[in-house]
Image (tube, rainbow, N blue to C red):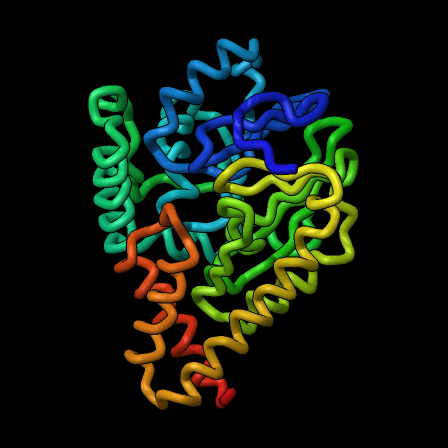
Length: 299
């Protein structure tokens, strides 16, 4: 079952933000942590939800970023400014990426453009949402544990969607946070985005499939429970394999990357009545995936 309305997931775990841009808050005995950074324009929603759900904001001591894309780090500047002692946590590669001035420029520009398109410019006008070069934090990697007091979060390195992607898992609640490295539960399907390295994307899914999952907490379109949550990663593995085979077959027939990309975008548009991203963005995503697969020599 797919839950797309913010609220309590289970005891001490909350889904916050908006349907299209989700973050999660987990409460431990000693402190609380936000998992994922969402889009910057969800900050007004978060502040209202914290009040509505009677969440003790003063206990939020950590914010875990799962990768460096603009729609997954957006709230970090605001909360770091609001609470200077807040500890930001991410992969080492994420911090490398976010130290590049050009990346920061593009991130802030894209965030502002998205805020405008969502009709949130006025609501966000007086909020500090831009990423700054001085923002930094702790690095985590495969096997690390974050202890909030009675609640431990395990870290898995899951590159492929991006070179810096990590996933989080809370054994106590059997809650998995794969970010876009697990695919996106769009409508009733899963959108596969092995953008930076398709092979690594598939390998990362394999790394997660042995986990017992009661709550599959996505960064987009909410969380999943029940039978679907238990089978989600296996389904994503299957769909990633099918997607790769489709890319290979189209390229075998065309022998041209541009033609392959165009055909894949047309298939995507035909299959999706409401688009997750624009066709231009999806064209860029497919180009990266096709280029990688062709470069691997398969076919």
